[in-house]
Length: 362
Image (cartoon, rainbow, N blue to C red; front, side, top):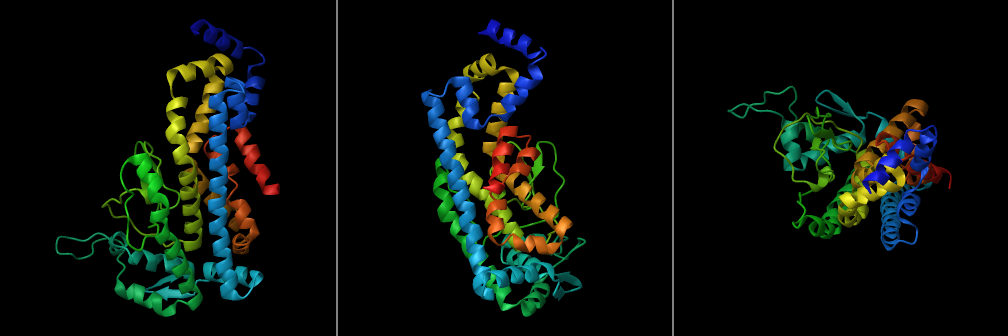
């Protein structure tokens, strides 16, 4: 096979190399596997079927959560349009003031939900000296939270109750899969919600979690919420709890759907004989494209969360905060299932970009 791969390399350096490489990049995961191994191959049929089921499972998970949130706002406000207006109000009007900080109700909810957790309080209180006195540039306390609680609307408190209920149900939903893959139970935190901090400087071999701002190792791309929390202290950032929830949903939905598949698929895709076969049939570009698919399946939840934040920020800048409010309606279900920006961020194959972009219009 070595001579065959050498011949393939020489061909790739010819005039038609760029066009062929581009066409490889256009192929879907199913078409790429079919081209390399043959459409009737048992292994191709197995993994194409697994990927199709994972994609559907992820979409269903995200849609169910988005629609649950939409139903909540509609119920609180008495109708769909009223629900969107309520979300806009809670997420854009800085009506809460506490110890000099002005926050929207959704940002204020972030502070109260962090304070409910031991780890959250540690970040909010900030660094302390040996005598237990605050030494950092920030120090939030019970009075700060009490002032917020006194100003929260009933609607905001209902949103908080809904989010805590959904977060609280995750452990039972996710732990069986986590245990099957890792051999241990998933960590469980009382009154869990994502703790968001000002983005930490990622060191060598690390990246910044798009949902929480925490640094995380690139060696393991399990969502941060599924990991044991550390003991470091970072300055809290009170973010819109609805946007945090939807970003978190992207990560968890993808991991829950694709992690079981990758347990079987990764060892196959990384096997030397498989890589050699891919290179013989599709050249080095084929190896690169297949590797990109694996990377996306493994880290797609993090990519999608980053893409969702990018989309939300872009809409807010272009059309104002009102555009963000529209996302609670049907458009949210479409947007959060669409990961074309994430594909670009992750240098995904163009085929994935086109497929997911098309879902905007289907």
